[in-house]
Amino acid sequence: VACRAIRAGEEVFNTYGSLSNDELLIGYGFAEKCPNLHESVSVGVDAVTEVARDQGLAARMVRICQMLNVDEDDVYEVNARGQCDEGLVALAYLLGLT
Image (cartoon, rainbow, N blue to C red):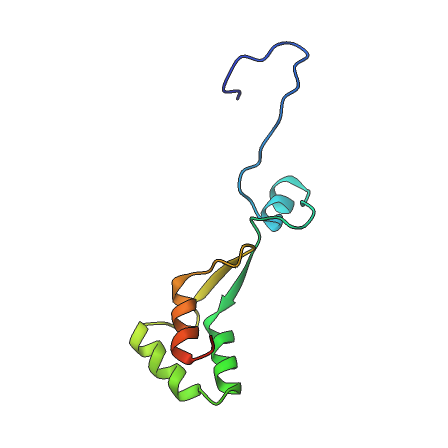
């Protein structure tokens, strides 16, 4: 579907939207060269808990999770620009990992 009339022989472009490489690969069979600014990584609370445990902060982590109503299976996203969910920032800050 075009958003305007296209003349015969005119070059046209296709956009796939703001998709990560895994979404592009699964949906369209290709991936972009790095850096794909729509990439992200998932950071699970279980990974934060492991870091907290390694730093001797396991008890503090339990209290923070209770205070923030965070479950062990919650997941936060960090994108290619380094932006992440506020919940992950709050956990790191309250644990003193920042």
